[in-house]
Amino acid sequence: MFALAGVLFAAFASRIPDLKSQLGLSAGQLGVTLLAVSAGSLLGLPSAGWAAHHLGAARAVRMGIGCATLGLGGLGVGVDLARSQPLVMVGLFLAGLGVGVWDVGMNLEGARVEGLVGRSLMPRFHAAFSGATVASALVGSGASALRVPILVHLGAVGVLVVGVGGYALRRFLSRPAGAGGPGRPPGVGALAAWGERRTLLVGAVVFVAAVTEGTANDWLSVAMVEGHGLPAWAGVLAFATFLALMTLGRIAGPAALDRYGRVPVLRLLALLALIGALLVVTGAGALAFLGAAAWGLGASLGFPVGFSAAADDAERAPARISVVATIGYLGFLAGPPLLGFVGDRVGVLSALLAVGVLALVALALAPAVREPSRPR
Image 1 (cartoon, rainbow, N blue to C red):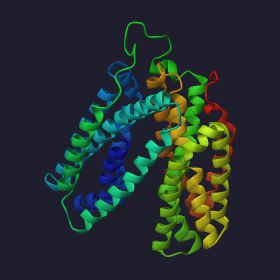
Image 2 (image 1 turned 90 degrees about the horizontal axis):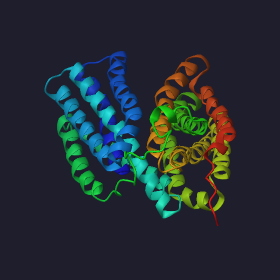
Image 3 (image 1 turned 180 degrees about the vertical axis):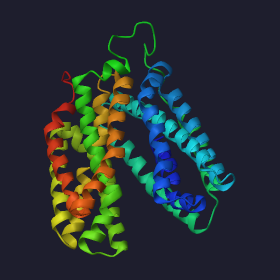
Image 4 (image 1 turned 60 degrees about the horizontal axis):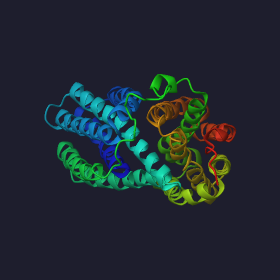
């Protein structure tokens, strides 16, 4: 399910230049159009906890997939047939809404599986998402080069997601005992979760991780080109280095988490992110690439570990994951644009020092994700 989410997300993202060109949008008009995705996600994420708690993770994900694929269809029709920006925005809104519900549901299911297995698995689920985005983006690049219509491309992705997703959903765990039942414990609702200190601190950890990752996604290659005078292909290679080490960290990270615990591992990774950002800003050539690698490894586990921490109490997990996801995705949405404003004044490369500051914040917040004590 995590891989399918990555496929769907990157399929749309890889065709944004074609969307802009075919609709004749300016940069500002494209920005307004893409706000529809954010609006849908920010509506879907808070409501997803309610859906997952009352309907179960599988039904929540099924609803999310249906909404997201319907949105993809609307997007394709809006671009290729109707040439309508409003219809495209409706499609993007539905896609964002569906992905928001889908995201919370699959993270809840992943956390439940992780808890029952008794070892760290969430980073590997997120690694599946990361790896699938790379593969889907490559397919999207090929589709764009071959001038495959957006409707055909996204329609094929929708069929894949519905088909494979339906197969996977039949193997989700059954609903937890008491979910949505009359004996629900107090404080399980989303509003109550917004008032819990630990949940908000875990959300802050995920927010920092999201800004750290999102900043690299949007600005690392630009900073390498504009700040170090590298050719465009070298800037992309630096970003690819970041993604590769982040994915590797998510694959290898569970062993370290199980052996040393969440807090020491996250503190070490925060230091790596700090060192990596400093090397990217102050280094040159190989040192800057080494910094991109350290930054990617340092950014690898904050996001998935935050979701695991939000789900430590299975009964309250739906509401808490919804809160943490909402806070985290605010980091993805707000962090990179804010860094862009700073970059206009001090240069993109220097603005990346903000990642170092965030790494220090992560060091301070790490105890919030500590595992609950368990009997030997």
